[in-house]
Amino acid sequence: MVNNTKFSMAALALVVSSGPSIVFAEEKTGGFIEDSSLTVLNRNFYFNRDYRNGQSSPTGNGYSEAWSHAIISKFESGFTQGTVGVGVDAFAMIGLKLDTGDGRNGGRSSFDVLPVNSEGKASDEYTKVGGAAKIRAFDTVVKVGDVFPSNPVVAAGDSRLLPESFTGVTATNTSIEGLTVQGGRLHAMSQPVSSNMRDNFATFYAGPVNSPWVAYFGGDYNLNKNVIISLYSSRLKDAWNQYYAGTGLNYALTDELSLFGGVNYYKAVDEGKKLLGEFDNNIWSGKVGVKYGAHSVALSHQRNNGNDDFDYLRQSDSIFLDNSIQYSDFNSPKERSWMVRYDLDMSSYGVPGLTFMTRYGRGTDADYSNANATYMRRDADGNPLTDQKRWERDIEVKYVVQTGSLKDMSFRLRQANTRATAFESDLDEVRVIVEYPLAIL
Figure 1 (spheres, rainbow, N blue to C red):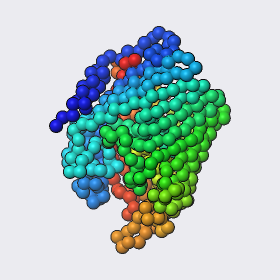
Figure 2 (figure 1 turned 90 degrees about the horizontal axis):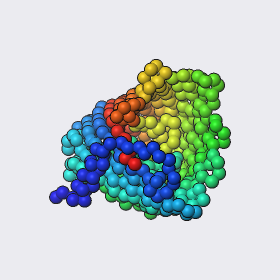
Figure 3 (figure 1 turned 60 degrees about the vertical axis):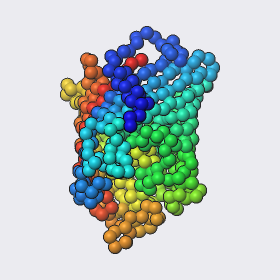
């Protein structure tokens, strides 16, 4: 039976997305209507993942493949005038299946392109509809409802067809120049393949966790034009307390030559009812690099000193570690990893909008000897896995149209290869993403 609400929303999104891109040139005077925006993003998403050992795939056939299309509409109002202003944000999104099969839809795994039911069938379409009320006063904006936080400990992910979101209260303050402070308390999340805006929490490595809320607080401070410092903490109630410290550095030596780098550090300890077991972990990464004209090269090192996987909210971007890349996080207990990355901006060669990236990461010494029951991984004989290794190689090409009626349309090709010992999958992966953003208001 067709859900009429879903059908109506889909039709509305299609009508809106087919309209012309309009940008009003008049100066904004400030206000609920004057500062409003309506954007529509068309996202075409192709994803295949070839498991080199078929038994590792969720559907057992060694191959997952899906082609889909999303229409993501977002409305953001301005604020009413006065000392205290009010406003509203809203969104309507639809994901449409273009091609996949029951044997290659990825099942219920990290593939996560389309919803898959208990019978193993992918949905033809699914939707997300939500919104948030917001209040602005004294350089502080508070939002209540469906939100998209972005920080090192709670960050809504957007690496699949539809973005992830959370439900709760967030606040952001910018009273001090160069300093952004934010905090929030969230009581639900919505995975990229879920229409339900009130899902329970889940983590990437432990799975579902019956926690009533996650809260976070912290900030980013631009010490000067070359240095940024970040400090954050979060609590997934009855599961963990996480603490993050990070720095970003960028120093120009000449107009053509600059140095960049940074350090990221997380500490995670069990909390309350210890729903994910007992742990006391810390993991860090450091990066140094040089940029010369169109070229940049970076070298990074990462090390998990804990006895368990460093975990984070499922399909979120809440892992600001340099060696967390397309598939691998290089975050297993005691794991050490190195990565080299090269970037090229073709603007200097007469092709503005075209960029290229490749990287290679290698991890060693992963050891589950002292992992707790939640994160333990064992071999076929029941012994904890030790001396585990893996590598990943990624290539990405992206082009953004610079002028004309298709301005800002982007084409991105992402390819990854991973090989590992017993604790991870061997796989080859290709993603093709075409996005066309439209500014209606």
